[in-house]
Image 1 (cartoon, rainbow, N blue to C red):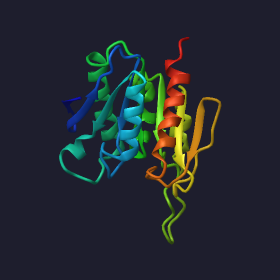
Image 2: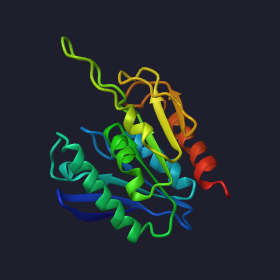
Image 3: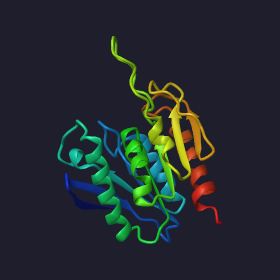
Image 4: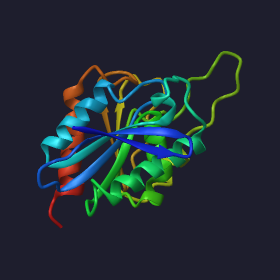
Length: 207
């Protein structure tokens, strides 16, 4: 494992790289809005992907590296993420089939930028489909268009009790429900198995 400090227009991002021997693909994951790359589901998915022969990178957005918990605006997140991936694809992940993803806010960033970075697939952990409605407030706008805009195979792993709701499956999008809430901590084994099976079937299986 090594950590790269990568300059972006909005500050320094950290990329924690765990390269696989004779890697068959690469997986780059982003964290949630208020959390970090130590989230248990991210770590579990990173470990199972690496065990399958995938080089894995966990990316810390500049606002987190700077010590802030409040997330940056979407366009800043997307720009910083794209700069980091461009850097990785030119170096450590060169010539590897690229899968992007993350948990919650990180999953949204991965969806919005999938085409721009040339991703072959997207993994969404706890996609925040519909923000819980606040008392007296208008219903929040669904984030489903961000998922629907992805044109490559997509895996969504969602807790059965996630207050943000459950995205529908489509021909390109597989949705796996596991026990638990938005944290996905209840059954990390089920989360890992969903990702392992999808990676083997969709990304790693010889064409």
